[in-house]
Amino acid sequence: MISAMDLAIMLGIGSFAGIIIGLVGASGAVVMISLLYLLLGFSIHESIGTTLLASFIASSVVSSVYYRNRNIDFQPCIWLILGAIPGSQIGALLAFKTPEAQLRGLFGIVLIFMSVYLWRKGFDREEVVKRFGAIFNVKSRNLKLIIGIGIGLWVGVIASIFGATGGIWFFVILLLVFNLPLHKAVGGAAFLMALTALFATFAHAMYGNVDLISGLVVGIGAAISGNLSAKFANASPEDILMKAISVLLAVLGIFMISLEFLSINPH
Image (cartoon, rainbow, N blue to C red; front, side, top):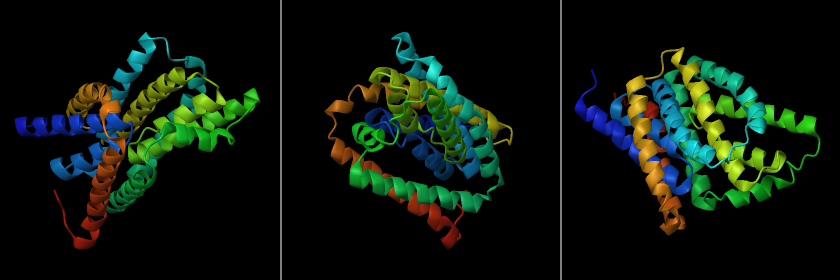
């Protein structure tokens, strides 16, 4: 039975991650995974599966807003999700087959990599679009569909292994390959993030690595705080905020990796 203290911690984890998602649109999932592991004693496998459920809830709230404003074009999303569904199953199998210590260390490395990237460059959608614009300037319809399925497959695998649902990849493909307007690219990316998280959650649940109650509580916390914090995003000093988040990710990543070398078991 889950104690009131554990429920409060879960709600706090979700709310904290939601604030990060709402302010900068990134890094929320990895924070949820890290804190579920460090504060509540989840295995790294269960932390990833439970975070995917929470991410599904939070992304669904965001995508519903875009849907009500008619800013989701479902046709190109179909091709991306055709790749994401099998990708999520493959990723879940790979994660399940990876021993706890190795997966924890790999996740720690990803945290540090993200920390360095955010510290140096921040998270700028316009920069990403410029960087990939020439690469994804595709005219052929068949090639567009192949790229869509391929990116969907890649994101599905990564989502199931690391719990991050690849919104920026979906955004870039919808904007540059399928030539959607900006709002529809963002709305479609949110919709695809929700679906990818959902299928990845099912995949992890098959291996017993999803805590339903925890995922619901964390997801509700993330959805509420993310929705509120997004309204204040423009008022925040972004450069300082990015550096603070990058430091947090670096600390979490180093701690994850050091557990193996120091023979520490936080559980």
